[in-house]
Structure formats: structure tokens, C-alpha cells
Image 1 (cartoon, helix red, strand yellow):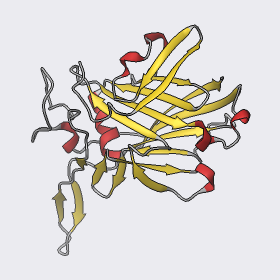
Image 2: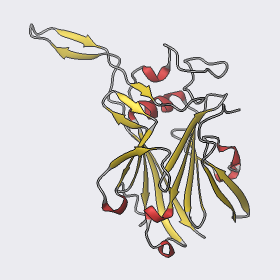
Image 3: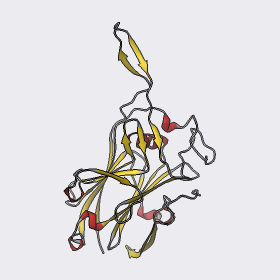
Image 4: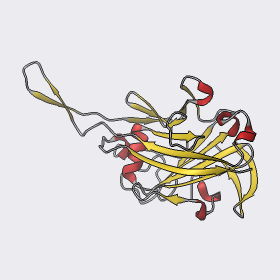
Length: 244
């Protein structure tokens, strides 16, 4: 069961039938309304993702069960890409969480490539544009939901009907190590510990502690997301046809 979050007022009235499945979308970080058959599992990351749309909005959901992948997402951020030419280009999308120096913010997202505008940061709960909800459940699985108006993807919505697009997620490589070595003036090496702080997690949706038997009300000193890690860039791409 997911704890209550502050996204409950953001409802998107979108009961519709596609592929014989009716979905009533609610942007709250709880993916329970998504039928299991909508999800596809990426074997490398074990992340589940699902894509849907109505005549106005593109909906996406992603479940991240692996702690190591959660840690990379929360420390380094994750990019969502939308390519309307279905060529897996990374020119348009959303960065979330937003990495700012040594702070990862889940209160904001960065949009880039929309309407040829410069990248800009906005709150994840901004009316009339893309919105995001994030939450952990009682099994410590991280859930992220996106709601993206089709009009910011393509001004002429008729151009999107029966349109094949590419949707991708990329988790950036974590460049931190457990202790970074620097060269001192006397030619000796010194270890410098680094870490990334997570800020702005919505109330009731805190990251789990290191070994959580049950849900925690907030991060502890042993919070795995406060620890450095290493890894490689990982990407997921899917082809999707918008129909309405």
C-alpha cells in the first residue's frame, strides 16, 4: 500500500478504451490503475514501464524494484526522451530528478527540446504542462508516473493520431566513487568522500532505509541514496503508436 501523497488533487479525466483495456488515470505515484499486461520489463534493469494515451495526454509509468537502479536514478537523474520520428533521438524530453551540483531535486523537472525552446526547470505540479508523481510502496519499489499534454509534443494534434513514436529512458552513469583521490601539493594522495543529497521528496513518499522490513516515514542516516555508487549509462527504448 502506498502512503498518502500530495498529488491526489491532480486527476486527469481519461477513462478510455484501447486494446480492450479501460484505464482511469490518476497521477499519484501509484501505478495500481495500470493493468499488469500494459507493462513491459526491461531485462537489464528489471524496470517495468507502460505507455498509454487519450486524445489529449500521453501517460507513462515506470516501476523500479532494484535498489541499485533506484540509487542511480535518485543520485544522477533519469532522462525521458520522446522522438516523434521514431528514430530514438534524444533531442526532446524531460529530466527527472533534476541533478543540481550535489543535490537531486524531486520537486522539479527539466524540460528540453519542446517548441525548440531552451531547457527550463519547472515544478512537477504545474498546470497546463507536463506533470510527474513519485512514490515508494510498502515493498520499497519506486514508482514514477508522467502526464504529458500532447499539445506540447505536437501543436497540431491531428499529426499525432496513428503516429509511431519512440520513447526512451536513460539513467546516466554515476561518476562518483566511494572515495575520490586528489593530488596534494606534496605529491601524496588524499581521499575525499563525496555524496549526493536527495531533496524535495513528496510527503509520504520517502525513500526506504537501507534494509527496510516496512515502510519508513523518512530517510535515515543509512539511506542508500546518500551513498556513492558507480555504474554505466543504461537506456530503455520502446516504439509506441499514438491512437485516439
